[in-house]
Amino acid sequence: MTKTIPSLNYFLARRNRLVKSIQDTSGTGVVVIGSAREVSRNRDSEFPYRQDSDFYYLTGFDEPQSFLVIQVNSDQTSHHLFCRPKNLEREIWDGVRLGPEVATEYLGIDFAYSIDDLDQKMPDLLTGHTRLYYKTSTNAEIDDKMRQWIHVLDSKARLGIKKPTEFFDLDQLIHEQRLFKDELEISLMRKAAMIAAKGHLKAMSTSQPGLQEYHLEAELLYEFRKNGSQSVAYNSIVAAGENACILHYRAGNAILHDGDLCLIDAGCELDSYASDITRTFPVNGKFSHAQKQVYEIVLAAQEAAIQQCHVGKNFQDPHDQALLILTQGLFDLHVLNHNVHGSLADAIEKGAYKPYYMHRTSHWLGMDVHDVGSYREPLDANNGWRILQPGMVLTIEPGLYFRPTPEVPEQFWNIGIRIEDDVLIQTNGPEILSRDVPVGIAEIEHWMAHGVPLK
Image 1: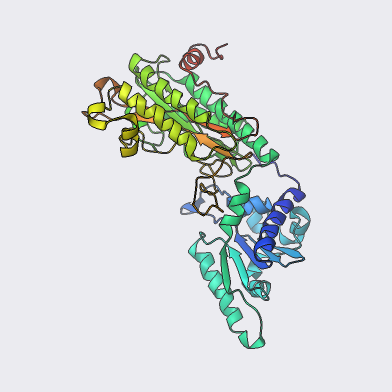
Image 2: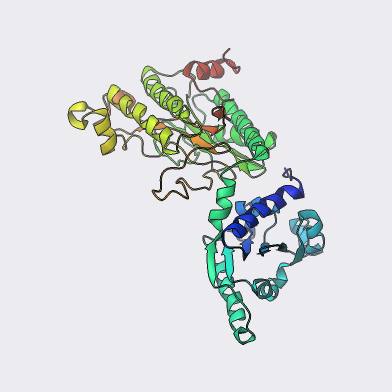
């Protein structure tokens, strides 16, 4: 399914915001950013192509072998695109190419060229500028090209030309923009969460003892695609029984056993925007007493963390609140012991919870499932945690994982529970984008028994 492409002015406005940030700091410079590479899977087969998020964010262009160049002066800018030329033979095999002849009209670019002309034209586009902005985290191939283009300019030094001598990381500028979602982005993320929820609901209602993990994964993938998603946002985790204690477990052929839990961490991608949902439910539709005890602690931790998702709070606040609930829960389950671990504050300070909760509670969410943006205040000399502001989207995903160890009471062995939702920061309080999937124990059991929400 193809993407819904916003208007040309939408992407131009993004580029203009980037240009203004450069003009406000250094006045002039050249921006160079390339598309994602195609990646071979094996021999003549390639992985499905996924455009570089930053490149797509600025262009709305989904083809490989492309470069965007923006020449920034104090009073004007010019936008240049290199892309694949039209080629009937390759288009028969691989699909239609836009081509440079119409790229200016379709993408709102000032000038467009064939990618075959990149090495010839790039030195000229860099000439006259001393500041170069590009993605320093990119691949070695582009670094080599940069050196090659600068070397060409070095050979013309006697002509008195200016060349880039200052190099800046473009990531920071683009990622600061991407951290704050506009109304269109939020709308896409709501839809992505809604589609992902349908997949989780279908997997829950399909679950029964004797099936295998990949059966539930198939239900997820079917619902994602049927409802308009172009792809998964990441490899789906479908983990039955003891596998739920493996954080990045892939759906495999393990059997869903009666009495076990199943943890599903799965999200879809819609028009380049991700959803990220985790639910843990009983394979047979009924939580055991021990499973309920652990689940209620994790759910309480999530609810307390979400209550910290308000404008003016910082990124660390939800995690700190979740740690309080989870660590106290470990004492209540007699996994931790005050004689050994001291007070609640002592246990948190010493990290006594870490064998059972080894990841953080949140990450940014957007075009990437672990989205970009600084977790620290960029202009804070003390490097304090990022203050939550409207338009940010983050996950809230506490969990507890109990492998068989002498410290853990046997009734909790091999129980792994994580609950994750996507939360939008708003001026009037958090919006949970992903609550179309039941989260309470009674809600989950009712859905699995009847296939309808609990009223």
